[in-house]
Image (cartoon, rainbow, N blue to C red; front, side, top):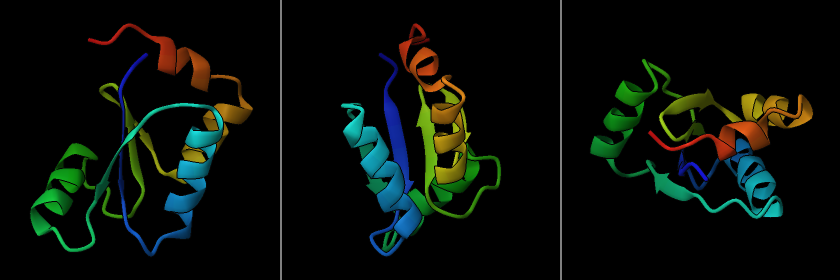
Length: 88
C-alpha cells in the first residue's frame, strides 16, 4: 500500500472529514500539523505546487489535493487502485 501523508490543521473541518474517511477505510496515514510550524507549511506549499490550504493529501508521490478530491476518488471507485499502486 502506498504511504498516505496529509498536511493538516487542528482547526480544519475538511481535515477532520478526510481523516474520518481514511480511518473508516482502515488506511494508515501520517498527519503533519502545519498550524504552528512555518517550515512544514512551506514544505507543504512546495510539495503541493503552491497549494496553501489544508488538507493537502499525498498518496505515494501522487498529489491528491484536498478533502473534496479525496472523496471524489472514493466515489469514483479510484481510491483503492491509487492506494494499491506499487510504491516508487
